[in-house]
Amino acid sequence: MVASMLAAASMATAAETPLRLVSVTGSGEVKAQPDMAYVTLGVEARRPTLAEARAEVNATVERLLALTRELRIEPKFVDSTRLQVQPDYRWDEKSSSQVLLGYVVSRQVDVELHDLDRLGTLLESRSRPA
Image (cartoon, rainbow, N blue to C red; front, top):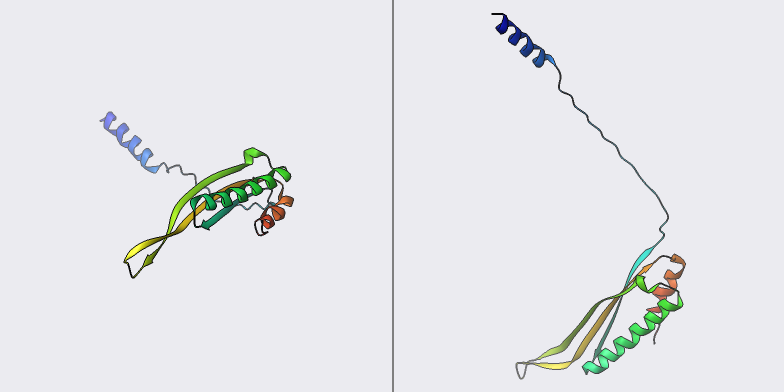
């Protein structure tokens, strides 16, 4: 009987003890001036021969890489990330076949720029003719 009374008392105490709960909510906001930029530049040429298209793209990319050296952008922050070569066709209704027009060559160069004062020069260089 004493054992059953002790068991009943401990059950009542456990039932009356509230659950422990921790709840946290919050929000935050950070404002900062940008100090770097990721720039992706693409070069594409469409020419009758693969050699012409490739030569044009390579010359343009070489001028771009020379500019990154002039701007003193470290080589580890400049990366050629994509090269694509594909034939360029059109459909000829009369012969019901594809006609090869030439080739399309494209390259992509990624630049991680840590001096934002050079960003304008880098972007403007892409719009200048060779």
